[in-house]
Amino acid sequence: MTTLNTQATSVPQVKIKRQIGFFEKYLTLWVALCIGGGIFIGNFFGDGVTVLSRMELFNVNIPIAVLVWFMIYPMMLQVDFSSIKKVGKNPKGVLLTVVINWVIKPFTMAFFAWIFFAKIYAAFISPELAGEYIAGAILLGAAPCTAMVFVWSYLTNGDPNYTLVQVSVNDLLILVLFVPIVGLLLGITNITIPYNTLVTSVVVFVVVPLVAGILTHKQLIQKKGEAWFKKQFLPRFKPVSILALLLTLVLLFAFQGKTITDNPFIILLVAIPLIVQTYAIFFLAWFGGKKLGLKHPVCAPASLIGASNFFELAVAVAIALFGLQSPAALVTVVGVLVEVPVMLSLVSFANRMKYD
Image (tube, rainbow, N blue to C red; front, side):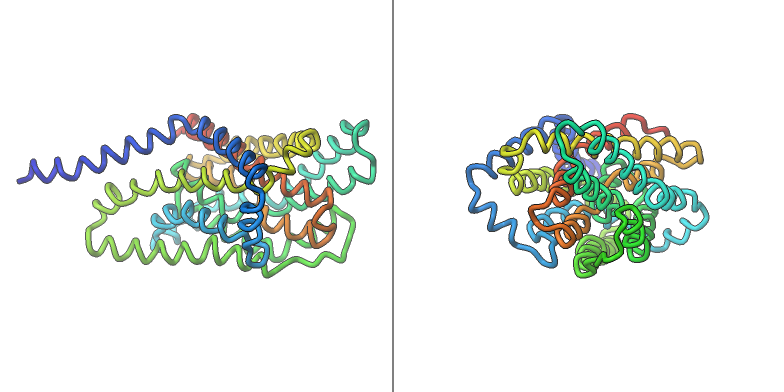
């Protein structure tokens, strides 16, 4: 009987491993296909895409929110509130997150934007346009990521409890630091932060999946045991998480497919400083975390938190301040487009360089 049971339980695990390998082994190819497919859909099925893009609640797109929820839920399944109190015994990871996101990142983003838009691109962009492009970049740099961080942490085997604390600290700091930092860097004081967007994003991307994950975690462990939960239940969600990520890419690029094909040169110009900033912040946090002695499950998510952006908030503020068709809003949208492929490359780097 023991032999039969072992064989019965090992078959699903083998299938799961094959599914994960199928997605992860060729992830770069899938990403490229999804980007190309999204642009194609956006250009040739514009009406249907427009309907999906307008399904919003306080500037948070509902189809994207559903897909992101499926990406985040597997991470939340691993959260153990009884272990969160241990985070306080090792505060270096939280300190790194705070310093990178609020002391360094907004100012390096402003610097790179100024270098590229006002100096390097001076022959292509007027000073007035450069100012708006810089403004859009600043809005991105001052809005650290809330949702997708859980996905990056999950894909790098990050500590789910520590990641939750890091994101929660950022969510609280956004409430008090976003407006003054943006006001300082833009030189304006009449900024109205869209709290509806902020609160909706936190509830949809953090609170709801967290509660669902905790309830699932508690009930299944009580019924099936911790060993079954970790070895058989959790692995089933990794293919789901990656598939949701790929579908998110398709939608994001479909929403902006026409913009990309109509303005490829401008999109490229805008993307370059955003990509440079992303890599610069990641490696600063990565090597800084290693210098502080952080373990990989804490250092990797901390570095990825610093590199990614809360693009829903940045886009909403850019539209409110400068208008839907403004260069500033375009920069925040390009930030959405470049973030996922770039962050996936950094996830790959973090996994290859895993040091403990």
